[in-house]
Length: 403
Ligand code: FAD
View 1: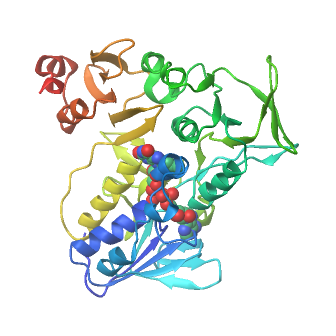
View 2 (view 1 turned 135 degrees about the vertical axis):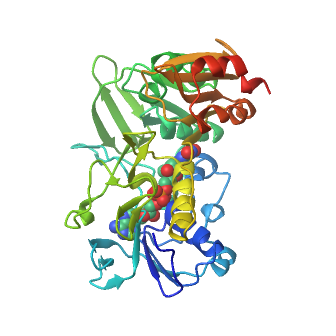
């Protein structure tokens, strides 16, 4: 790879975390050429994690989540094209077509278009509110401002987003009810055993959680919604939030010739084609050998941005260990690595009913992940287990979490 030169022009599509962080890091590394940052939203890049936490809890204004503040934009000069959606990519000419019919041609293209909230709609209510963008958070806050104190709010989906929204709405003196389709929340992420260890988080925090829920209909009413289920009485709520996962919009890349397979397929340096890369939620990247994964978490998007900027500036960089956190029900859940839900899991600190614990995941005797509940220090000292291949036996012998 020839390192970037001052006469190169980087066209970054997607003005979210990965796109913006890439611009910042490549400038910090000394890139002095042109950068055009194209974003479909009208706002300058902002951070999403506070949307379901401080912003939904009414503790922060949305402006506080801004990433590309005037000060940071001064240090990271870019041509911002906000409110512009890319509609096509010409890989050979590294050229992007926008929804206003204009084209932006550069020498390199970065695809950092993230993901979208999966929508849920019923004939009798239309599309239910979701939370992905700052506009969504503003709309939800306006709706919440209009309900009575203590009002019941229905949250469909007990995953990260649903749990965080419930926590935030509790903080506002409301009565969130979480409706989860699976036997336990996070089953598909942390697996059978660990999801069992987490099952009391919601009730211990005072949040009503109903699992194994099959929703038949959500009907809009004058003062809210009526949720109808298979096999139980309907629930009347003042507001409903659908927190049922995400989808990708790859339509604009369909004629590009890039390999699209549940994401934009990239190599270990995030290259989708010559001088075209993909980062963050949208990128499907190789992980530990033949496996290809796509991860929708903050740190992975930030690490991708760091990796690509270094790679294009001619530096060799090792891959990062995937990481996520979630603040829910007064606790912090954190995970390092990318275990499969059916990997072996061993709790090495804390036990049932304790507020703080640490667990290791392993597959074929090799450590694949570390999961912690409100134990950030033990998680951090255990990262060493994933920086290099470590057997479960070695991990248990060295017990870095005790350091
Ligand atoms: P995004 O941040 O989604 O940015 C993509 C941008 O591209 C968007 O602004 C979009 O409008 C724009 N775009 C899309 N298509 C086009 C197009 N065709 N043309 C131009 N622009 C386009 N992760 C954690 O690890 N911990 C958390 O606690 C956590 N909390 C979260 C809370 C919420 C409410 C949400 C929504 C996400 C949370 N995440 C969390 C996930 C994390 O925020 C994402 O993984 C991260 O934002 C991904 O960054 P990205 O740049 O890939 O995508």
